[in-house]
Image 1 (cartoon, helix red, strand yellow):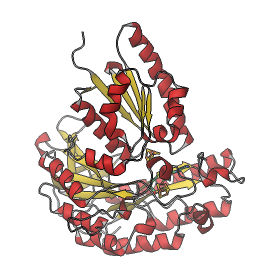
Image 2 (tube, protein in one colour; image 1 turned 180 degrees about the vertical axis):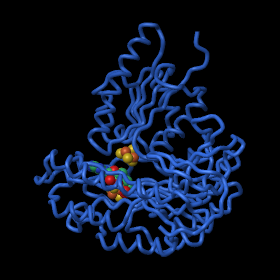
Image 3 (spheres, protein in one colour; image 1 turned 180 degrees about the horizontal axis):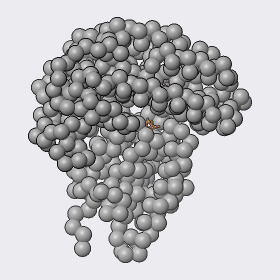
Image 4 (cartoon, protein in one colour; image 1 turned 45 degrees about the vertical axis):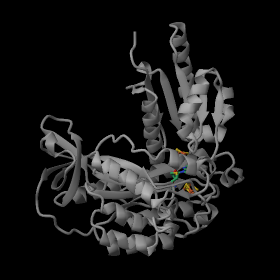
Length: 452
Ligand code: SAH
Ligand code: SF4
Ligand code: F3S
């Protein structure tokens, strides 16, 4: 029966995991694995996991239970089925994953997955390995080959890890310290993607604006200088970067929004809370005014810029007054879109040790209030786009015949009447109507300045 063996890589969590999942798929392709559409037609499943909140971790074990049953069914048919656990849960729990779920063949952390092929060979020989080395520089070296592009927009990693140690967060433990990739490697990867048809590059990193990779001269570079280099690559028409920390948002980067037209006027800048007391307890190292000042300078540099953010409600010790301060910051800033979460105590982080945890009911109530406000702002932002002309990068056919779909600079989904030959083009589109999750427009119309 089946010809080619197939792998299914399922990813949870952040963009970094999406990027890693694609690289693992590329590595598996090099070993002869085709891409499976789901677990059901796969011979190998990689769960690329996320450890950020308790729910994310729990999901992994329930998913593994399901895969273990699938493996037993395959075994009964005399067929192989391998289960690999990668990502941040693999890093945080290591051999514990092998202990908790007997069906798992291999555990591989986010800083050692470049060794996936070699470790799979050992797994195929019957060994159960948990590899959680922090070998970031070695990984960057090993991944230097051109990635396989998967569309018009692609992620390119510039930086990994985090030295910030926010008191709620597991990332410094699961990804290790901040490491930047050399400029030449990033430029080579972006150029290879552009040559293969990629038009939009998003430079990613856990703290992307802390980027300090070495330039060809041997001197440390910066994110704005890297973006400028990337803007010269033939074929690249739009650049983005994510995720930024407020304390690394320097004037040089803010100025890049004025001097680099292809840099999308959209910044994801997590603030977490609007209360100075909570920001301090979170070890964020900035206060609410510092954040507002950055927003003001970004808007001065590029009047049509929009912002998105991440928020945590119910951090230990958060009072009603602290929560009100978060709402006040949101009202003052006005966000185009945001992510917001209930605080989830994570093992090994200082926040989890505190004895002033907030009751679940209060967290639920605060989250609902905050999300209602953020949703109102998102809808208002979308409505304000109607009548404007924005640049849309077309990525795929639309849901209806004769339509194509793409993204505005603000990550809004936009569809217009048009043929698939326009996929890959960045065109001015006049927005005609705003639905709850997408905008309708028509190609053309004068580009006009509109301050938001
Ligand atoms: N490096 C990025 C994002 C890290 S994780 C940054 O510094 O912003 C993405 C988001 O998950 C965070 O911004 C935060 O809002 C949320 N998060 C992290 N730890 C959390 C926790 N313990 N409970 C709830 N949300 C959390
Ligand atoms: Fe986590 Fe803070 Fe680092 Fe972001 S900056 S990854 S929230 S520790
Ligand atoms: Fe999750 Fe790890 Fe990203 S914990 S958010 S996958 S860095």
